[in-house]
Length: 490
Image (cartoon, rainbow, N blue to C red; front, side, top):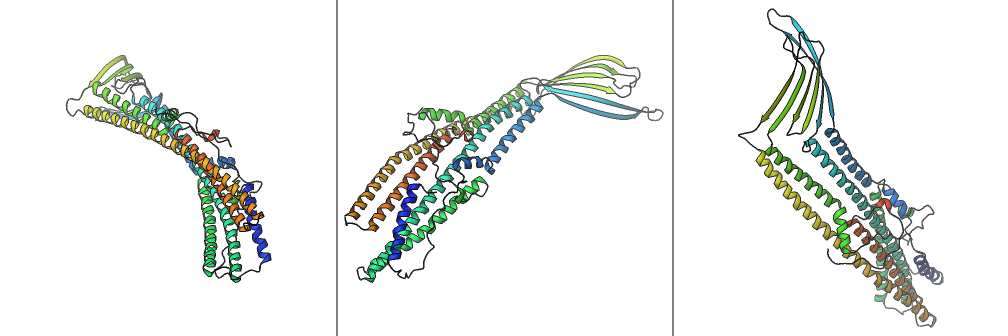
C-alpha cells in the first residue's frame, strides 16, 4: 500500500508518458515487450491492519504449539501434586488351604485391605519432584511469553518486509515508466539523426533492466506475502493488507545496566538454567542424605494378630520409612472371622546398611559433578543473555542513528525537485529531468520509510531480548522516541 505522496509522484511520472504516446507515433522496439507495469492494488475498506494481523497470530500454529508446551508443564505439575499428596488404595486377596493334606478340610479365606500413604518428611522424593515441577512451570511460563514474543517479532519483521516489497514494486513501476518514455524519446531523436546508435542501444538496455527489475520486485512481493502466510498459518493475500500503518515502537526504557538486569531476571533460558541448577542441588542433597542414613523403617500393628488357624483377623498397621520419608497405614478386614482370634500389638524396627558393593559414595560424587555442571550452564546462560542484550541495543542505536541521514536525504531530494521544476520553467531543463528528480524523491521517501521500519524492528528485537515484549498488551501505534537508552556496563 503506497502513501498518498508516493501515489501522487507515481501518477505524475505516468501522465507525461501517456501524453507523449498520443503526441508521437509509436516506434517499433526490437526487444520483446515485458509485462505492463501494474501498481500495487489499493487496500479495500476491509483490509487487515497490523492490529488484525497480531490478533490472527494468536491462532497460528506456532502460538498454539507454545500454549500446548506450557499446558504439558502444568499437567506435569498436577501429576507431581497427586504423587506428593495422600494416596489411598483398596485391595482384596483370597486363599484356599487344607491342613493337614491327608485329613484336613479345605478352608477358604478372603481379606479386604485399605492402604494409605503420605510423604511426610521434607526429603521424600515425591516432595522433591513437586518442587521441581513447580520450578518447571515457572520456567515454562517465561518460555511461553518468550515464544509469543518471538512470534510477534517475526510478524513485525514479515510485515516490514511486505511493506518494503510493496514500496519497491511501486518504485520499479515508476522507473519502468520513466525508462519507457526515455527510450521512446531516444528513438525519436535517433530517427531525426540527433542521437547515435550506441546511445539508443544504451537506452534500450536501460529499459530492459527496468523491466527485469520490475519483475524481480513483483516476485519479491509475492515471496514476502508467502512468508507472512506461513507465519500466520492461513492465506493472507497482500492485496487484503493495509500497509499504511507504521510499525509500533516497542523499545524498552532504561539504561544499558537496567536492560541487562531485567533480562537476567526474566529471560527464560536463565530461569530454566536456574531451575536445572536447583534440581541438581536437590539431587546432590538427596545423594548425601542417602549416603548418611541407613535404610531404616519403623512399623506398628494392632488388632487380631493371630488365631487358632494361624491367620490374622482385623488389624491396623502403620509404617514409616525414614529414608524415603513416607508414612503408610493399612487396614485389613477378613471376609470370614477366624476362630479364636488373639488381639495384641506388634512394634518393629528394621535397619540395613550395605557393607560391600556400596554405591552411595559414587552417586554422591556424580551428583556433585552434575551440580557443578549446572552452575556452569547458568553462568553461560547469563553471559549469553548479557551479550545478546548489548548486541541488540547497539543494533537499535545504529539503526536510529541512520534515521537522521535518511531524513536529510529526503529534504535534499525535495530541494532538487524544486530546482528541476524551476529550471524547466526557465527553459534550462527538460520534462525528463523533472521526472528523474521526482523519482529520486520517491526513492528517498521510501528509503526513509524503510529506515523507520528497521528502527522499529530493532526496538522490538531489543524488547524481546530483555523479555519486556508482551504480545498480549501490545498497542498500536506509538511515536518513535528521539533517542535510545545508553549507559555504562553494570
